[in-house]
Image (cartoon, rainbow, N blue to C red; front, side, top):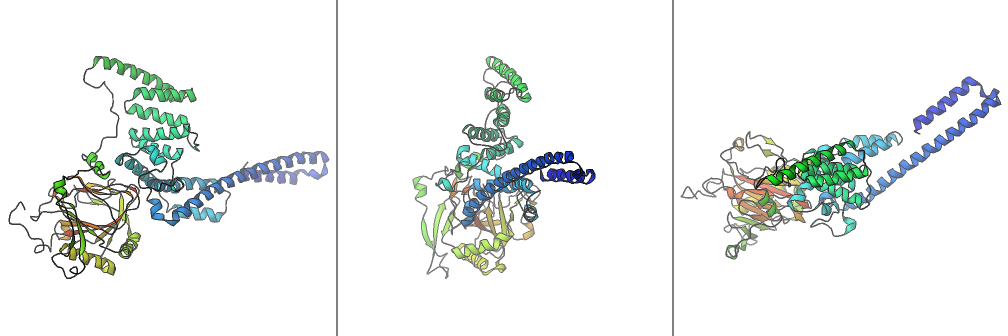
Amino acid sequence: MSLSSLLLLVLLFTCSSAHNDFFTSIGHMTDLLFTEKDLVTSLKDYIRAEETKLEQIKKWADKLDVLSAAASQDPEGFLGHPVNAFKLMKRLNTEWGELENLVLSDMSDGFVSNLTIQRQHFPNDDDQIGAAKALMRLLDTYQLDTHSIATGQLPGSSPDASQRSVLTVDDCFDLGKVAYSEADYYHTELWMVQALKQLDEGKESATVDAVTILDYLSYSVYQQGELERALDFTRRLLELEPTHQRANGNLKYFEYQLAKQMKAEKTEVGEDAEGRRRKGRPDDYLPERRKYEQLCRGEGLRMTPRRQSRLFCRYYDNNRNPKYVIGPVKQEDEWDQPLIVRYHNIVSEKEMEKVKELAKPRLRRATISNPVTGVLETAHYRISKSAWLGAFEHPVVDKINQRIEDITGLDITTAEDLQVANYGVGGQYEPHFDFGRKDEPDAFEELGTGNRIATWLLYMSDVPAGGATVFTDVGAAVWPKKGTAVFWYNLFPSGEGDYRTRHAACPVLVGNKWVSNKWIHERGQEFRRRCGLQETD
């Protein structure tokens, strides 16, 4: 019984006392004994309910206290694990709301008010869905299985089981529902199977049962053309709940379709039966998806020994630049065609931390230039946040800009501001060009500095797993290494775009990826990188 019901009963009791003069009759007073007994019983029920509720809240608080203590020791490292990031999105978007509903009527106003105020800053449904999709992206890109993700056993993550975050039955079910809402039946099946497996292993769920999971499973495998498995899941569902109306209807329909398919298979030669679907990942908009993901896994092109022998490491002073004659920088060839070089120990730890400190308050969702309209907009294939830092804002930014000019020999007065990017859970930027192509609006026209002639990319963190920069046209892969920078030209000396520089930032599997990049433009380079005598140069 709720507190309001109890108070109502007390109120009725006091009102009846006022109007019936119970003290004038023992007979009436005996009735009050039973009324009081009922009140005591109701009060005990209320106390037990509140104690149960408080025990649930205490367990929740204790669990989060341990989690917060572990996470606060290394927040970026903790959130570098994609399962931790997903569960944070889910807790703040869903579970804290459930806790608020649980305690809203009976806990102190201070806590509820504080929680209500804080909730406006919590992640929303889009954040939770985005984190769920990131886990699916990691699953595909790095050819993982749902068990590895659910148990937190990811490449590059801590081998200590006590340090790993795991997905519950409810978590796996929620991931399957996200895929289902996108009509992605391939991933729906994977996560529903994982949820069912954990239920079969004795794991508990607060919100979902095997019947519900089997209902999703039967439909998702049917949508992939696996009628026999759809039948198996439906029959198993009906064993648990024989009166399930939809399952009984599906059973007859699947049996009919299977009989029809088997009949068609006997008469068809060399073609699929009518209505049959091919199982697999959903159709993709990115034609180079397979090559891109192979490179992300480190399965890219291997140079011949002869080509490899032409790559060198050297001390570099940029034609005896006075700043680097005594202390030249370490330069390493990463790729030959196009030439991609890496500079080691190019910035200090202190400089990188200052850049991050300046950028953090300004980080906003990264955008892309629409190839049709030229308008900047967000895109599902660029998952990161970025901020722009001008040289005037802090001496360390000016110092880094000057260092880029001294090392590359290019004029950076016409370059864009330093862009700092931080990648989120499963953060990526799918294959793209840095320079503007002829068939799209001039995205740099308003700058008046020409096209992007070159890219300088500085890694400001190590990434335990994933996060490589890959060049899909030539098969090169460059792996993040804190304090190093890679550099390449986007344009030929003639000013034509070098399409071999199409590149991508692979999804971050484990870790927290920080980079900063400088896009250097054509204007000002006329005498620093001269055009060749031939148009084809």
